[in-house]
Length: 165
Image 1 (cartoon, rainbow, N blue to C red):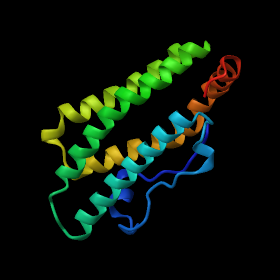
Image 2: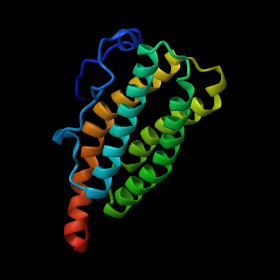
Image 3: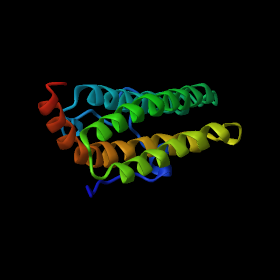
């Protein structure tokens, strides 16, 4: 498993990271070599950065209207899991990826986090919104940069055999 340094939520909230800076930058190491999946992953990085930027702007301006940005991120996250996980899981099954069941369980955990965020939105605070940003950040660093690479080889071999991509 990849080790990475991450801030706790209080450090994130109180950080001096300006509103013009990306919280997480798309890097080559996140690519798995499957264009459809890589593009979807880039959209998740953008979602994480957009929410972080909006929360930091609200914090910097001492505004309390962060809820719209948070609900928008939750909606986008919900749409993301429906499309992205379906696409990934279909590719894994088609390629005969041996660890499909475990990978799907990890996807199901992410989906549950999104559903929990939706169901508890009315009780959410700005801290909850920053916790969601942190969750997305850690997902990108652990799941996308590591776990998804584990099925990529099987999918790329499947593409070679079937002449697809």
